[in-house]
Image 1: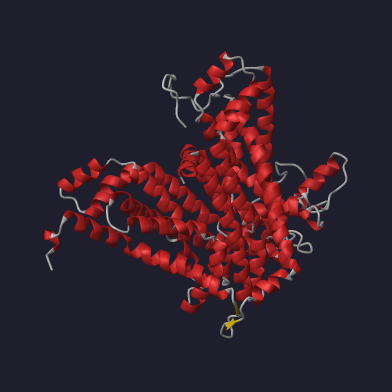
Image 2: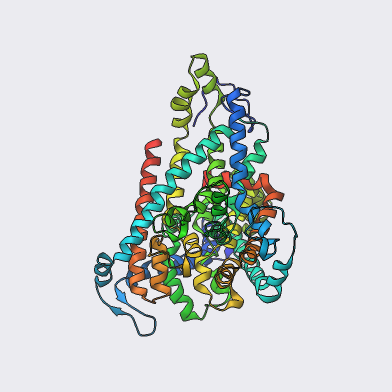
Length: 298
Length: 291
C-alpha cells in the first residue's frame, strides 16, 4: 500500500470523487431507489400496517379495474390536464406576446402576473374557497349579484366544482409560464423580424412563420411542466373540498388525492401503492414524449 | 438557436419587443388589457389581506379598504392557535433543507462535472433517473420507513426526503461544466485541497445558479403540503401549510380568521419577492431553461 502522497494523480482524483459522492450515493439509494422498488413490492400485498403484509398477487390491480372511484379520479386527473394545460398556455402566451411589445410599466405588469406563483398553494386554496361560497358569503357570488346576475353553485355542483378547483391552479402557474415565454421571445434575434418586415410580411405572418416556430422549445418545455403539474394536482383539491375528500360525490377527486385517501385514511398500503404505479406510468409516458419531441428539435 | 453570421448582434433590451414595434394604437389597447388582467391577478391577494383586517360583520362587503381596520384577527390567531410555532417549524425545516440541498447538490454537481473517474456517467445517469420518480410514488414507502425508524412527528421526518434533489444536481452540474478547468488546475498548483478548491474557487463562479436553486428549494419547501401532512399528526410539529389547512377546517365559517392565517402563510415569500424581484425572475428563467 502506497502512501496517499505517492498515488497517481488519476487515482487521487477518483478517490476524492468517491469521497465526495459517498454520502449522496447512500442518500439516493436509501431515500429514492429503495423506496421506488419497495412500492413495486407493496403493490402486490395487502397491508394495513397493523399485521404483516400479505402477498396477494395482482388482486390490487384487479380491484382497481372494478373500482368506480378509482376510474372517476383517473378521469378527473385527465380533465385537470386537458383543460388546465391549453387554457393556461394560451393565456400566458397571449399575455407574454403583448407584454413583450410593451415598454411602459413592463416590469410592474410582469410582477403582477408573476406574484401569484410565489404564494402558498394551501393559503390560496382557502381564499378561493371563500370566493366560491354561496351568497351572501362568497366574493364571486356577491359580485354576480351586484351586477344583477344569478348566483352560481361553484364548489357545490358536481359539474362546476372541477373547473372551480382548477382555476386557482391555473392562476398560480400563469406567471411562471409568462416569464418563460418572455425569455423565449427575447431569445429570438431581432434581425429575423427586420428581414421579415423588409420582405413585407405582416404581423400575423411574422407571428405564424417566425415567432411561433422559434418558440417551439419553450412551448414543449411548458406543455410538459404544466401537464406534470396538473397530473399531480392535490393541494387545491384537498383544501377546497369538504374534509379533503374531493367532493361533491368525488367529482373533483384526482388520482393523488385518491392515493392519499387510500393510504392514509383507509390504511390500505397495498392498494395505494398499486395506484401510485399507475401515476408513475402516466408521468413516465409524458416524460418520454418530451424526450422524443426534444430530440426531434435537435 | 443560432444567429446568422451577418446579423447585428446588439444585446437586446429586455423591455423592447423583438419586432421593434413600439407605438401603434393597438398597443395602447393591449397595454390597458394587460394592466386590467394584472390587476385581476391581484384580486385574491388583495381581498385576502383586506378581509384579514376586517371585523366579522364587514367580511361579506365588497369594499377593499376596511371601514374599521383591526388587527383583532391576528391577535386572536396568535393567542389561541399555534401559528407562531407552525411558522417557526416551516422556517427551520425549509432553511435546513435549503442549506443541505445547496451544499450537497453543488458538491455532487461539481464532482460529476470536474472530476474524471470511472463510473462518473453511471452515477450521473442514476441521479437523473430519480427525476422520473414522482414524490407521490414514494410517500407510501417513506411513511412506512419513517414509522419504523420513529421519524414521524419530528423535524427530521419532515426534512429527510428532500435533503438532496436530482434537479439541483443536474442544474449545478450544467453550471460547473461551464467553468474553465484552468481555474481548478491553477488552484491545485497553488496547493489548495480539493474541498477548498470547490468551496473557495468554484462555488463563487456559479453564484447565479446557487441563487436560483435557493429560491426554488426554499419556496418548494415553504409551500410543501403532501409530505408534511403525512409525516406529522402532532399539531405542535405541523408546518405552516399543514397548520393552516387544519386551522381553516376547524374555523370553517370564520373567513376573516382564515384570511389572517392565509396572509401569515403567504406574506413572507411575497416580501422576499418584492426585495429580490429581479434575481428571482432571472433565477426562474435560468432554472427553467437549463433545468
